[in-house]
Amino acid sequence: MSPAAQYAGGVPASPASQYNGLIGGATNLTPETAKTTNVGIVFTPTFLPGFSATLDYTDIKITDLIQSFGASTIQANCLLTADAASVWCQKIHRSPLGDLWTSSQAYVVDPLLNEGKLENKGIDLGMAYRLDMGNWGKFRSRLDAGYLLKLLYSPASVGGIPGKPYDCAGQFGITCSAATPPAPKYRHRLALDWDTPLTGFSAGATWRFFGIVHNSITNPSSPDYKPSFGIPADNTIRRSVTSTCASRTTSTRSRCGWGRTTCSTRIRQSSIP
Image (cartoon, rainbow, N blue to C red; front, top):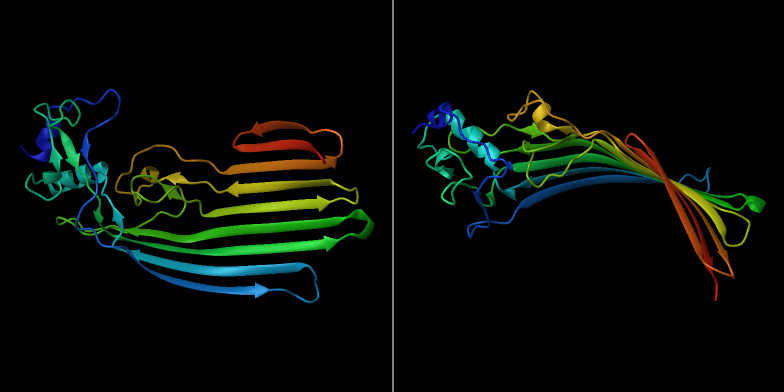
């Protein structure tokens, strides 16, 4: 039966959206190979004591990735070849009903293998500043930020289907490498701390930000394109006030949130023996 004919009469869908697969390791796997290029500069100006900054450029190229194709890719390429004898279609074993879940004899063969390559290119910025404010105490700040220039996944050409490179920067989903988590293009962490002149009393705030990531199947250039959803940008702001006293230990915390932005306030007291 041809791949198209298997779908012509309608294939029953799994109520749980779960399907059988034959997965696992392989004895013929070889190590991944990576080539890394790092260039960085450090800036500590004499005209601004207490300040330092670093700027780093990184380019990592990995070949012979150890991963699996994924059942969606296998089925899509099987339909694309329209040949039941193709390498892709031979990985699909259907039940008499044409599905992949009603029988243990119905499954997709998808073991680990060396497949494709991945290039990760980005810029990282770090800045720190410490200021002695005399009678007002000391102020400390630090910013760590990163911008992902490229996360290019290039699948291997298999069974007559050429591998089409796809940039996973700011993306997540089955189109990208199975080992690639959601990858926002921009993220940062900003920490501000004030050591007050009062012994044992300090205050601070931390802001973590992760840029928006889109489901790769919502991108028309993706081979798995279909309308879906993305993950919005995320803001987390934490404020803390800490005091050390000689009597008792108490702790309180409160949280608030709006949309994908959250904040928390913590007041902590700790005793000294």
